[in-house]
Image 1: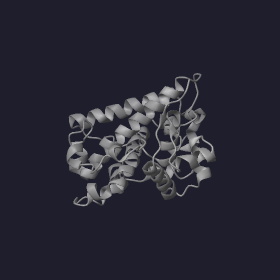
Image 2: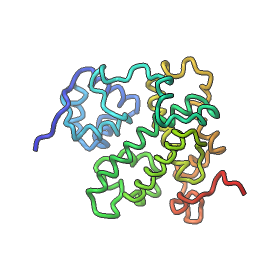
Image 3: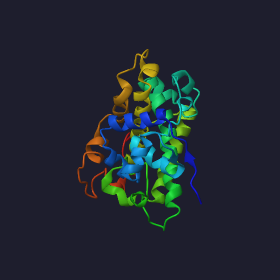
Length: 259
């Protein structure tokens, strides 16, 4: 069966090349991470068509939520006001940390939810116990702490997706969004990381007139009241099984609990 292809264009080619350069990747590095040959990637940057089954790998490498095919596909002037109508807009986050925080959760949770779903669909095709490191292309592979890679199977992603959906429900109903477990911290952290991509690309239209600029990156740590998730999970520190940030404790209620 032949694969459908997305028509190439000079505009798309320039965007791919520019984004690769921004990320500090060589053509060889980008091609390897996307699962294509160096010559194939070079053709993308020359404006040739892209096979549909290669799009996910390209987007993963470039850290794009989707492929920008033409100027008409670009969401221009993303509006905070429009996002306030989003089902996952949290009035609690807006009131406590500002509009950027509420935007980051709403937009970031959309992207993260889709990425979890994509990886679950691919894992469902593999034997039970398979993990995201065995997928040809996984959005979550570079996002989740590497020490526990082999634990990221279908069951874990289902748990992660369910927890994310619960948080979105909290936002929808105006309930407090707070992290009681490492898994909840991780989900909120990843939502913010995903939203930062949009904030960087739409910086002028989103934040130029806001008074809460200081929360663009750091509001998430104000919510946690520390930076332990980065210190322990994203600094290549080896964690033993008795450490509270070890994978075996991720779903335990540990934080923000009244005693």
